[in-house]
Image (cartoon, rainbow, N blue to C red; front, side):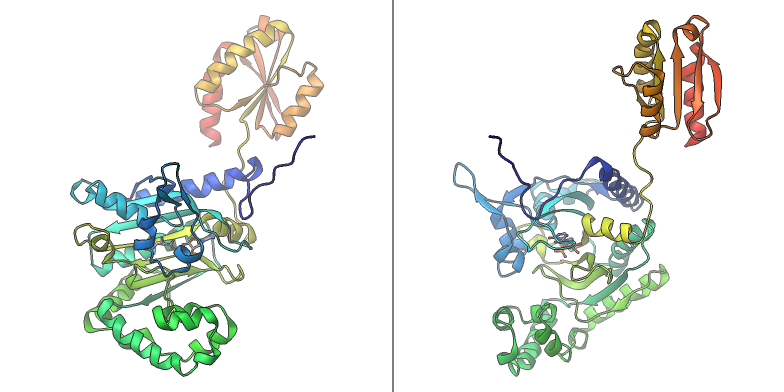
Length: 425
Ligand code: HAM
């Protein structure tokens, strides 16, 4: 008896009827990243698990609860990457990218893994796009990185999202702010959820990010980080806002943005689509000026963001946006008779190798069956070659939308079709 194998929980197949959507958003992201002069970096899907423990933080949800950790046959502790920043920082240090040309503005696309509770917009394997920018503390870079993420969503046509920004200060201003939060939340210890009771001892800021109703109500009147910024963090944050205004990027200041990873300093931001339900973050990021040094590199400031493609595509579908059209053949090749079929086989190869997309089904012999298949394939044109036409050095071209047919000289087919393609694209 044959067994049925199910797909692992929290994962899904991207079927041919949808894969063109993914290819489309990948392409637009790559094009925009290139417009900002970012280059792609591709790092392994798994890393030594201590990389994430150190960079993301061992008391974060990602490391504590969500990491896919395993041992290889030699007992090495590995993890499927839950995010892209730590691996990029590792590679930046390992490969001495600091001293290489054009290696400080990096982007990536690829699968990430978190043992999250699967729900709408939240998966255990999900695809992220992201950028990391190394080497500058200039607030202009913050604004530029934020603008890249914003313009990507706009370029896809999305309307229903907002950009929220905050400054979580440097490690110095964080100390005073943490103390103020501990003082405030201690008054409500009995009311906080168990996770937040722990957060009060380890990372009081995380309480501001809790999704539990009572914790959210209490957090409503908590002190604001913005009142605890030192002079330099405050000026930088003001400058980031000034640059965003100059770049025409609308934003809201939300002092409750804390981000769920430990490496952040100063600017933090999120792109939120409030029609998505609980998983409303289309993307998020921020500055991490201490991370490279903390991971063993030379002191190097950094800033970046990442977003999830699943939520992006879901939002585009909800807004009825176009994905550049599904992949379909330009031409469906129909033949009648043995000689015509033999001739077609070599012509097909030649046309495909010149960049045209063609479908041909050698199994179907009747004109009717082939015409039906041509219709179903949604090809723009059909080429029809019979033995008679072959003898007369001609071939019929049918426009599948208008139904109009015309004869062209067989030996000019390639040239003719290449011109046609140029005009139609
Ligand atoms: P993050 O906020 O953990 O940041 O994730 C970024 C985005 O990935 C989220 O806003 C969301 O769109 C998507 N995402 C996260 N988890 C899931 C999931 N389980 N299912 C579907 N989508 C998900 C980071 O990962 C940082 N590395 C961002 C960054 C880059 N900061 C600086 N540079």
